[in-house]
Image (tube, rainbow, N blue to C red; front, side, top):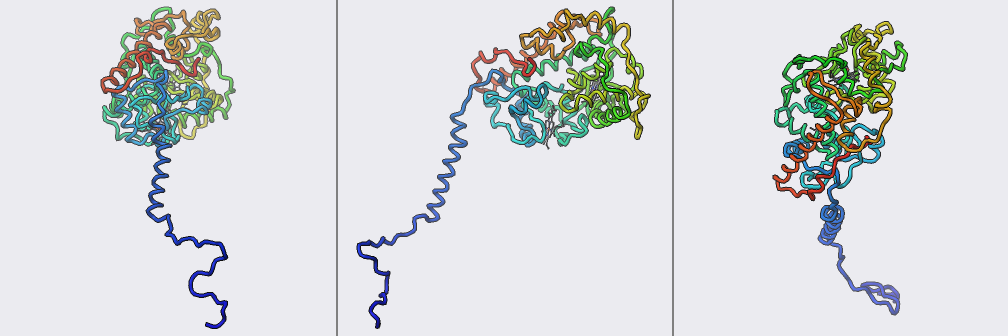
Length: 474
Ligand code: HEC
Ligand code: HEC
């Protein structure tokens, strides 16, 4: 070929002193890439999942308690039915600050989730419904059953699906047991308080135990058995009821004026929140009522509205704010504003005048003014003395059982002693604390022996003897 400087075939010549790189095959073949990817993946899995599971083993917290075998079966139902998809199972610090005394009384600790009966964990992430790690004891079992049968029965605005498919006696009782016993020792203590209060309310008002299992969906509303309900002489008939209301509320009035606006807003609140139990007519015959004992209060009686011993505006306010332990009456303290509670109290006092009728605007002349009776005034005078008035004196109470008794019977002062309306059963803050302690210890012992029978690892027996706490109430 003419022209001497044309390159010949093959690679171009290299500058002097350079060495040609040997020809090589590319190293990142699909197999190498696949293998490398797998190694990277498993290293991450090992660090993020395997290592924590096998090295993070916090000791049980002082609040930890095992689950009874019935509750453990309920836990399986909780998992199978995807409850954890809407309900997380751990309380964060910001939850506790948001609602101090209801549902989120304490921040969860790693040691609260110790033990085999907590595995696989049901922590969840979504909070479509409230976190349920501290649910135990806030509501009695009859509330839980009505709520599972149809959440709209107790909360007309609820979006929770109904659990009618679980309504065989066994299953629903297992689920209720789990919800009521899952919150460690402090939850068992609260549940013991709820059970004790139920006992007191039923004996005092003369009602039978609520239906178990799914019976509540099919039976008529329970009636008082009227067995010798004679209040002991010299004791106000409503005294045991008042013992569940902080004394400072016994005679307080409603701070809001009786205006059309306030009454109308009160009616709206009643229709949105209360009709599932108290009924569209306010007669206590809402769809949830058949599950409950005692059944929801009937507001249609004029005499009760004007002159009842425990139907003053302050009493109603306190019950709606904090609930009525031992009954299904629930705590609206962190769902309704203070003013809305006072407004619904105003409205309830118009119900005997048929203000719940459709398209009926409640007006101030419908409002029934409440007057304390002579007997009530005398009772209050003898029980609101500053010297023995627990509300004002607020001595620090030590001992969880006494604290829980005071939470459930906030109207009892340490020196008080009364009889329930069966004429026999004694009620005092000390006897309540003793009863709550017995119930608590019985449940804890049963859970421990169940866990031992299941062959589970249990902590040092000393852990069991560490007393429970009443979080958020000190
Ligand atoms: C679609 C979401 C969703 C699912 C699934 C769900 N819930 Fe709920 N749950 C809610 C909502 C929202 C509330 C709050 C309104 C109410 O009280 O019904 C609630 C409330 C509750 C409460 C009452 C909390 C309280 O004290 O106020 C309990 C107990 C409860 N759920 C248990 C369960 C159980 C057990 C399951 C499974 C069988 C379940 N939930 C499935 C959304 C859900
Ligand atoms: C889950 C059912 C339920 C819901 C919801 C409910 N209540 Fe109740 N309520 C009860 C029960 C049960 C009682 C106890 C009756 C008894 O022991 O005699 C009660 C008692 C009361 C009392 C005390 C009555 C008295 O004579 O001392 C008032 C006041 C009251 N409820 C108002 C309300 C208001 C207002 C709402 C709505 C914001 C409401 N309740 C929602 C079940 C419920």
